[in-house]
Image (spheres, rainbow, N blue to C red):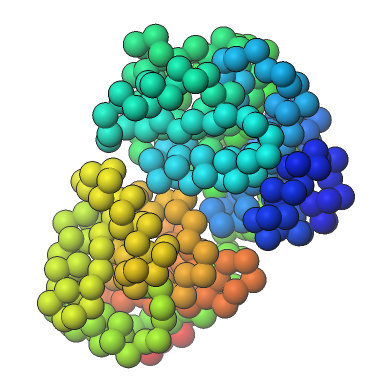
Length: 369
């Protein structure tokens, strides 16, 4: 489906065209029409399927149709990580740049003063992480009584990160009469019961089953004897491989920092992104990587979840994740938008059972090198 076939405001279509979008992705095609009809919706979609635009575009259309707005927050998007919140806010600004709708992003890890000052400008759209949202609401800086649209993004990751109780507290602050949209990559029992308590007769849309995400990616596995062997293999791979942008996954924050130091000693400059880094350091690392100033970014799973890096050439797993779905989320950051993607995974002898679980999930044998 072409975007200009959707019943959207010309100024919104202009901004979408300026972003270079012409065809809606499957999640956009399935989700945008029912959201425009103000239906509640559950969207099951992986990161990288165009999910943010699937809710941002219809929200902008609905709010524009209600203009002039009488101040106050009309749409709230709650998401688990700072990086994802910033990315969603960037998308709202890009799609809504000709509409005059003010949006704001708030998150923890930085001083709240600047965010409080911006809240005084009465944004129509608020993108927030749970902790900072509850904190500023408790202090009286945020009023959600005029809210008409609530989006809970990455619901399964909220659960993984222990935010489910914060989410339930947030929901109690919202008007009962509202449109609710819930997006999740997977639907474990607790997310399902949360969805049942939040949504009224929702439309359900599903795209890209977890196993098919891996189909378009050239995957290979390298046997390694131990950590030292793994490090030498990683250095050799990065020195020989022509990939211009490489995302390296580490299981732990400490391991990520160690890898950056080790790569630096081998004249392979890299930056790390994980939860112990300051917000400024994380943003700097991410922007340097996106702009091509640095070739290698080392990340932990939680820090990388939701990061959308277009044109990523190669994903390297320095360990075999104990949860097979984590592998699919990791490698799904390459091979987007119809591009060819590549991934490499290092496997120590004791991790072989987890590697077999990955092959079972993706229903595909991974090439061994």
